[in-house]
Image (tube, rainbow, N blue to C red):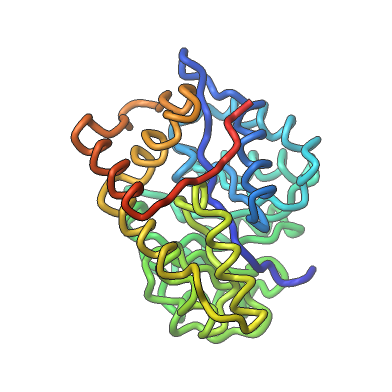
Amino acid sequence: MSQIKGIFAASMSIFNENLTLNSNKTINHVENLIDQGCHGVAIFGSTGQAQLIPISEKINLLNNLSTSKYRNNYLIGTGLNSLGETINLMKISISLGFKKFLIMPPAYYKYGDKEVVDFYSNIIEKIPECKIILYNFEKLCGYKFSVECVEKLVKQFPNQIVGVKDSSYNLYENLKIDNFSIFPGSELKLLSGLKLGCSGIITATCNVTAKLSRTVYDDFFSKKKQTSNEKLCNVRKVFDQFNLISGLHSFLMDEDKIYKNLLPPISLLDTIDKKKLINDLKNLNFNSNITKAA
């Protein structure tokens, strides 16, 4: 399997008014992101509210996603604390042709590197054909991968542990592993990461910055002058003022009202914050140009 590289959006999920997952519109959304420039999309990550979505609705989306024209461009998250449920959802994904996963260690409980190695060892023992990108985000799960832990996992499972999404930013400057994908979790780190040998990014705001991010990525490898990176970083900084999920849905709901639907306890930005978000983006002359969810 070739190394995973490029611009990946941590996709939003789209919900009906009754708060059930709208599979068709979510898939249209992720396909539009690839059409706009993303090399791929992470499904059921934290941006997609995966921890709040019933397993039955996840399975339904995966079944429909298996017929997508971009089925080879997806990373599948699980959003589950339970080891058994994580393994079961991964097995279903494998049966549908998805082998690439973005997996975070369980939240809430306190543990260290040894227990993390044990967690992934149990997954790989049951699903040896999987390809896992580790998800490093201490803010969400309470655990931060060490360089040593990642190196140990890769040494122990070189065919299964194939990369890391680094949203805690303690790894991407320090990890040096051959044929291993490293993805910072923000557009702010895209260009500096590429200069260090990183593989691209996996980020929430690529739901609206796909074109800009792809331009920065392509210009780097074409050795062109960077003309879009400053704007890309400024757009990210605007969204970073707010909860990213709330900000993205509040921004896109003006293009399609279905984006207003969020799973509690997540909510849209209040009137003041939304006005600031929209005005700050207008001052940057930013328009996502994302096709409306059909």
